[in-house]
Amino acid sequence: MTVEELRLKVFRDLDSRGLKNPSIRKGAFDKILSFIQTNKIYMRNGDLILPSDKESLKTAYQKLKGKSLNSAESSVINTMYEHYKGKKLYVSEVDNKDQQNKVEENVETIKNDNTIKVEDIEKKLINGNFLTVNELENGKKVPKDPGLYCIRIRKGVYFPKDYGKIREDGIIYIGKAEKSLYKRLWDQELNHNGHATFFRSIGAMLGLRPPKGSLFGSTSRNYEFDYMDTEYIKKWMRQSLFVNFLPIPKNQIKKIENKLIKKYCPLVNIQGNPNKSKAIQEVRKECVKIAQSKPLN
Picture: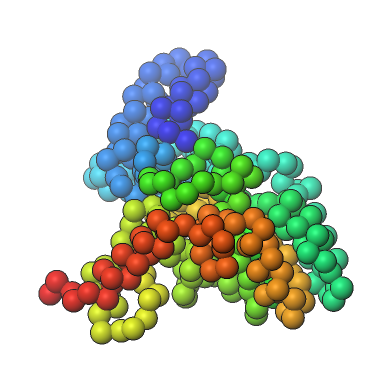
């Protein structure tokens, strides 16, 4: 969602309320939008990426003012979040409750089945019911069983550089969790608590780079971003991605993952992808080179 799109929605909302003087709140809102636009962490390529907690934005704006927010400012931030979250961040393509029930049903019917076919996985994982990152309820919806996961990008979201064609269905990554979907998908890939290939790739594709020399003297290629960039990537994911996951028997995970990657060729997958993106490979190599280089000081 762009600043102008949100501004239009909020202004229409204020005009519909029959307020005695809506210009007061409109003026307060324009000042808040100006503050948001000047802060890198809230914007990327013209799109808004606001904190999931509106109180953190209120606190940041209050620090800028140097005094407490007035009632118009506090109210208009509440209104802004109603439209920002309701329209872009939390609404799925189908009814949330029904969608979550279907995901839980998939978990129960698949995780103990040792005779599953790739076609069954495709039906439930690739063509199944996806959730936004926020709908995972801080990871509570993600099982701790081994399995596969699939990540899809929201239509209309683009990277700052052309890294290759994004599939029409938006699928950009298929991954495996040989121990725990919760640990691999939620903890690592979506929150970067530990080494995460997908997280590192997305950060690099968004134009971010690790601190120079952060891996100096090490042979590791597991670069990390600084705190602000890490938080930005997490917020971008919560606004831009849908995920699906499926517990399956551990002895079938690798074989099925390989087949799905070869068939669907998700953009961010490199290993095993016959159409792997050279541009993504290059930007990841650049990040490793920066991290392994001699620090400035």
